[in-house]
Structures are given as C-alpha cells and as structure tokens.
Length: 443
Image (cartoon, rainbow, N blue to C red; front, side):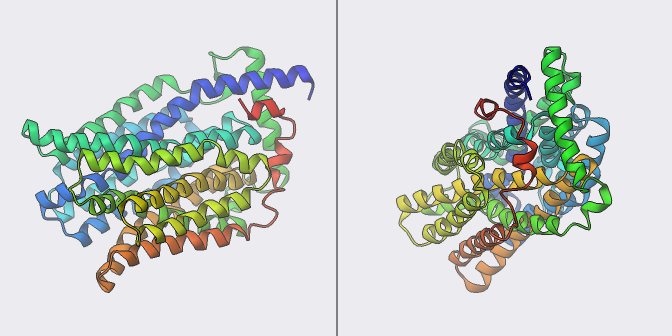
C-alpha cells in the first residue's frame, strides 16, 4: 500500500470512528440497560408484585432463551437488508416491550414479557459486531470494539444512579418507582431507534458524509480482508456449524456470560446488602464505582493486548481477575469488597472485546453473520443459566457466598479455555491488517 493510500485510509477510519462509534455506544448502552435494569428494580418489584426469588431468577434468564432462538435469523436478515433498517426495528420494538414491564404483576406476566424482550432484542449485539466489520479493518477493529464495549459499564454506571433516582422519584410523585423506571428507560430506546433509521449508513460506499477517496480506500481495505478470509474456506453458512473452533468460541463466551450477567443482575443487591440499605439512589451511586473503574481499565487493556500480540495472555488475566475478585468480595468488609468488585467488573469488560477479536478475524462474509450470531446466541444462554443456578445453589447451601464462587468458577474455566486457542496470536488478525498503517490503530 502506498503512503498516500495509507494516509487516506487513516483519515477514513478516523472519520468513521467520529461518526459511528458514539452513536453505536449509545445504542449498546440502552440495550444493556434495558436487559439488566431488573437488577435495580428487584427489591421494589418483588415487594409490589409478590414475584418469588425463583420466579424472578427464571424471568431474568428467560430473556436469553428467545434471544438465542432468534439471534441467527436476525443477523442474517441484517446482512441482507442492512443495519440501518434492522437496527432501528430492533430498538423500537425492544423499547416498547421494555416499557410494557410496568404491567408485569405476576410470575407468568413477568416471564412472558422477558421472553418477548429477548425476541425483540435478538440480533442487536451480533448485528453491531457484524456492522463494525463492514466499516473497520481488523487492526483498527480491536480498539473500536473496546470502545463499543464501554456501553455495558456505562449502562451500569449511568444506569445505576438513573434507575435509583427513578425508583426514589416514583415514591415522591405517587407512581411505583419500578414502573416509572421501566417506562422511561424503555421509551428512550425506542426514540433512539427512530433516530438510528436516519443516522446509520450500511456500508462505506454509501457514506455521503465521507469524501469519495476515503470511501474507496475503506471499501478496498475491507474487501481485501474479506478475500483473505474467503481463502481460508470459512465463509459459507454451513461451514460455520461444522467448525470445531466455533464450538470452542461458544464455550468460552458461554462461561464469560455466566459471570458477566450473574454480576450485572445481582450487583445492586450485593451492594445493598454490603451497605445495609434498600436499592435506591445511594446504592446506585456506589454500584457505579466498579463500572467506572472498568471503563478506565477498558480504555487501554484490550487495545494493549491486541497491539502486543498477547491476546490470550491478556484475556486470561482479565478472566482470572473475575474469579479472584468475586472470591474476595464474598469475604471482605464492605469497603474492601467494593474494591474487589472493581476487579470483577474490569475483568468482565476487558475480556469480552479481546475475545471478539478472535472470531471476527476468523470468519468472513455470510459466515461472519452466522458465526458471530451463533457464538453470541449460544454463549448468551449463560445469562439464562447464571441467575437460576446462582439462586438454586444459594438456597441449597443457605449461603450467598456459594453463588459468588459459582460465578467465579465459570470465569476461571473460561480463562483456561482461552489458553487452548491454537495459534491465537497468529490468526488473520495481523495478516489481514498488515496493510493498515500503525497510525490508524491509534486514532
């Protein structure tokens, strides 16, 4: 690649980052908030409706059953019709269903709405990952995905105080706080979904907001990368499901999600117990501390591991820190337990963008649409397993500590599986991005 073409590509990547990443981050923030905000509503919701702990755990996880079922079809539709229309559809429908949680006043209604929410939101996350592969070459993608992943801790950092504020506000205005929280946060997602229809651009070649030379440079770079993936014979739909490495990816991601969602759903309750007060604004503010710490670590850790060619090592450290942090949080006094939870959240947030650098470098074309969706769909079933298994273990052993150990053990298994990824740091990630200049990675 000539130096002139390289400079044009650098400019194109910078422009695409400025245009797309903040908006994608906002979308992911609302997505994560609307699936995890039941953790903040748990106390008030159960007190008002009488939903049992077991029913709440099942409903919290039921989201992931339909989410997994519709994940692959949704991503294939996005690949065919484009991200702009399909992302807008996903956000509008999930926002409306999330708002409808105000009517969840029994075990059955709660579970049905969570199942509908999973079906509505299916395809959003793998669709976002796929969309990023349309816009950013491999070497730039690691940093982009790390930034995109800030949506999860931002959702829980901002969403904690916001949810706590809405819970407290409801009592002052004569409305059940949990209903106000679901209504406001769900409608926000629908409004952003309408905005997405007019804002997103499906491919670089369609970007009227980008100069023609930058459009051409970016399109050519993505096309060259796709050709390398096709040469490996992994781009057909059917081949994805016969691929042993994909099953390895699924196992790792499944275990990560057990830990991640187990923490996301129950961290407010854990902090509430540590502080000795009900979930509200104060608990929301304290719960935001670990997620704020995760953002700081996430700003450099995944990109550093990818840049150094040590993805396995960095992913192992991130996952091991989850196990260590959860074990410590179960046995330390409140202030130190919060510090241990910072280690946990940092591990959750940094492990995932590093993980996604593996499959996105391995699959291409329609195989990427199917592969990414399959990994996300089956892996996210960990979000179904986590609350039910944690609740069952705690009831069986009459201890909340055993539930934290279970979540930590899942992370430790994931860490060990990461070390078994063969040739993980010599896959097409480097070869496909070899034509991209270093400056494009650090924009």
